Amino acid sequence: MTIGLNEIVQAQERIADHLRRTPLISSAALTTLCGAPIHLKLESRQATGSFKLRGATNAVLSLSDEARQRGLVTASTGNHGRALAHAASAQGARAVVCMSALVPGNKVDAVRALGADVRIVGHSQDDAQQEVERLVTEAGLTEIPPFDHAAVIAGQGTIGLEIFEDCPGVDLVLVPLSGGGLASGVAAAIKGRLPRARVIGVSMARGAAMHESLRAGKPVAVEELETLADSLGGGVGLNNQYTFAMCRDLLDDVVLLTEDEIAEGIRHAFVAEGEMVEGAGAVGIAALLASKVEVRGPTVVLVSGRNIDEARHRQLVSHREDAAGGRS
Ligand SMILES: *Cc1c(COP(=O)(O)O)cnc(C)c1O
Image 1 (cartoon, rainbow, N blue to C red):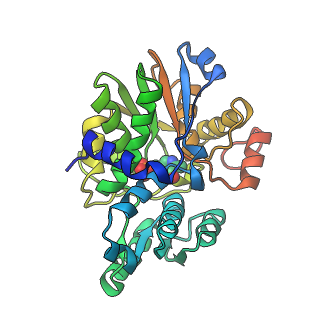
Image 2: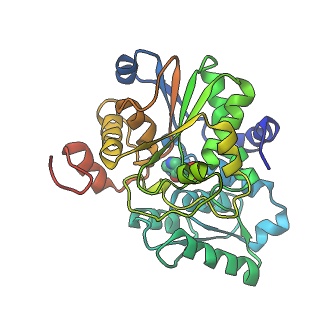
């Protein structure tokens, strides 16, 4: 099953009044470094601090009134939970968010502050997911998953339509990649409008579930490891319905980054671009800084979120540290 341009254009109409159209800004520093125009699509400035509000809003608005009233539930590493909490409360619906104990405290607090019911269960995304399934079966809630869902993918794809509107000559789009909802939607939109454009996924080397799955030719489980790009943690789901096939068919490549490279991306975003960006949001910038992609023409870097612990961010931008915390 795949999502195409029609679904994404419908999503754009459905969600337009409910969230921000984020800016595409030109990066002088990266343009000089790469020798081609580099633009940043700042979803870090989206309400709730990440692009996840697009998919969550499209999914909530696509439900029947009756399903919305029974309540919504998800497992999330943070940003999707936060987005669903916001999207649900905007429609007067209840949201329950199940998270593993690995999720940073600032993200848990943010979801609670948006009025959602937070349940902390186990130490992996899989444990949190089991609690979701229990609430669907026993309490009749509707699950809105973080990536493998038609309305979520179409919502994320609206970023691709905006990129094309603002940069019609785009040659390459760099997209942070975890479960692949973002990459699937954006690639479907970009390639639907401009088949010759390239779309490359960027993940951390520590626990890159979609990368491992694409190499294996089917969804595989990977060990979940701590990473600066914590929003990219978690598996793709062994019963993946949409995003595995879409990433396989639409992505031109996937590149992987070390923790030090991701730290450089966060630092560059702040020091050279003046943007507060979380690890997952900085991977496209990091891939350019590390010369891991071939730039041939106008390039758009999708900066996906800003929700990083403030103390951690301050430490990263003020010291040159390695990922283990020691000075280098
Ligand atoms: C969820 C998320 C991603 C990855 O999105 P997928 O659809 O799971 O691939 C990237 N960046 C941020 C900030 C996120 O919250």
